[in-house]
Image 1 (cartoon, rainbow, N blue to C red):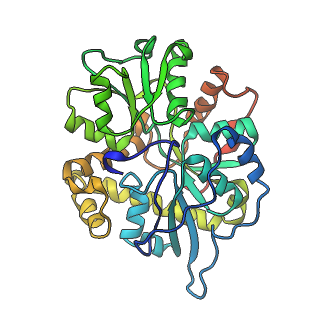
Image 2: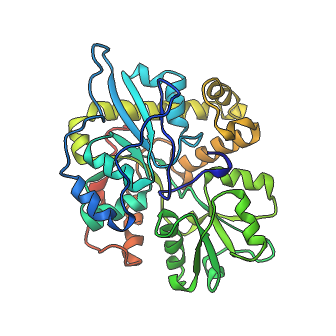
Length: 365
């Protein structure tokens, strides 16, 4: 992901297959943002899976596809380690990882059955289920916080939602996950959403120049950039919106695929939990063992510098345990409810739904 990485559901990129390094074609065609809800709902009646899962001829393994909503990077440490240390093979899985052009495309592909699972935002998942009745189901909560942060300059710091009133924020896209999180942060403290101007900007640390020049008062960065900016711009003010917004990144599939391919999904989640334990067990060594193993096969930009690689992995570890939760992949019921309740308060979705129907912990016990 490096210095030009993305976060949230705003944009995507290249594709990887774990059994080889070559590029693969993208998943199903992109979904126009304004038609996401309808497209997701329509996808529920799509064809049976053609590439999501199935027995590999004579090999005794199951072929499954996992979709990333951004280019594959060190932030997907479970997927990378599952390949490097052979844990997917141990569970009888042959995993193909494909990048999509954002979360809308990934979620549509999951509902169509052309891929088995993805990892995307809890807010977006709940929004689609509540608004359009999309049968998305959270089968394991890995990240327990927003993957983004807000950056501003020390001369005019934006530390709390009220500081943004009358200011201008830089966003990676209009209407994407980052903007939804930002709007919920404002709404949580009664700051009118329309009191803040918006401008589409870059996502890299270099975008900080726009803050210095006064073109924006602050902007959104992703998880890797949070590590980079602390090294390259140590005076920058970096604020986590998770102080005010309940968010996370669960593993997602469809209700239909959960019923039909439960064994494959459980095997995948077993690998995710095992790789998380691998990382946690290497924490005292500052993840040196993990980084050395990944470097033997992958060349992500953030792997070139030990401090950056360590920071990216440590950021994930902290996200797994955010709020004092255990890094066990289980969705905390009250936190999942908070995701829905904040959307209702902000009048983004209607009340009266039962979000407890949209997750299960059965595959991670």
